[in-house]
Image (cartoon, rainbow over all chains, first blue to last red; front, side):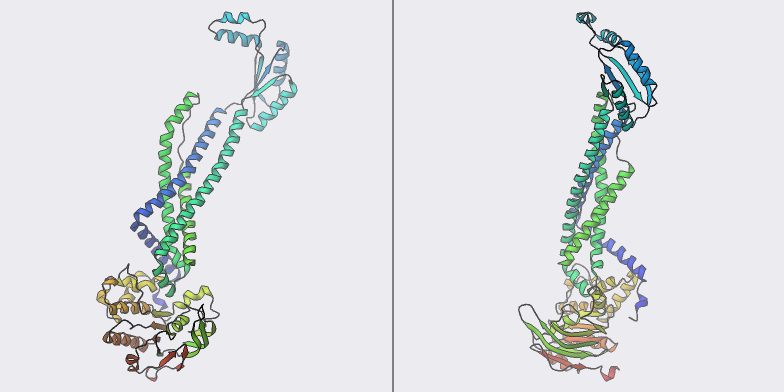
Length: 307
Length: 227
């Protein structure tokens, strides 16, 4: 057309259209405050729940890492002569994978035990010393694999010994942590799917309310892209609000949990600081909110514009 | 501008709205489409704007064959057309100027430029002083003029109007028709459906008469005076 020069340049028009759509979506959201607040709250709750569970899991892992500073393997040797025990200990000490070996003879163990009793005379009733000799082995390397290899080596050397590794529970905790993460992933995915559909239904309902406007805009030459743009921005706005709200909820959750958890840790003799969400988590929550909002707006507008 | 060749439109259920219609409206011409209610006038206009597809036949508009026009180019095509409806179809949730600005918004005009054009269009239809009014506060004639301003604000090459004076008294109807003649004078091709024979026969422009889905006069040339 002859007056094409009056129109904004292609990129400028595109940018202008986007800014305009964003402004309109914001206006619409602000003019339906009830619905907006409900959607932001739903999105916030749904984002905060898995984030909170994840934080608990991470703290549990941090706790296990704290405890895990020195894995040790204990060999309990019943009815073994003192010399055999000390010979074995000396041999183990010479292995390259071993940091230190501590030997406690059965007599020494009994003496320690006797000292701890209120009435040591009770032990005189025993005919023999029931306590085993103990060889404690501290591995040089702390990885579960290295500890396990050392355990196998020790079992080969002293098949009669009962071997107990305090590394075991760390491994169990690690496995539980992995299983917990996986469950969290599934829960998070289901919640994300659910909230996306809620946002899609809301966005479709909003477009259907604007049916007349859309029909006229279509007749005037509006593309589907133009028509769904406000829904996408609306979704992004809800996502941003939901992400920020979830961050607030998460902090409230942390503040409510921190004291009792730290108290419980002290009772178990494992003092540690319950870590709150890092900035990274905040960004992830807001990012997740934006993505879910956008996808919800896209799905909803696609459904509504097809009708 | 418009060429229809043996166009038939049959609706689901078997009603044949148009049978074997051929016509030609040259660029720069203004023609009236007449006939009783139910003769197929609206259907014919909707086919030209590609709001409907023909059952058979070929339609060319502004050099484009609507049969081969891809769906994704439909919006682009519609931007070259201005549509006026009998029931105005205004948006009552926004003031007059925002109603008129809708096509410019879609075309991506800058706000200042859009404002200027909206004012020019409203001035043309004599409603400049009502630019901030809500449509529901306007009379039927004023609402129709807002609808016309919206149809011409982006200066389309072709203006299609479906019974634009259907609900108006004779005085207002004459004013509205005069607007279309004015637009045509500056080069806009126009096809206006109306059953108000008394009014349009006085205007001395070609008339295409539809009756039971069939057409009598066929070829409308540009009036000599406008050439």
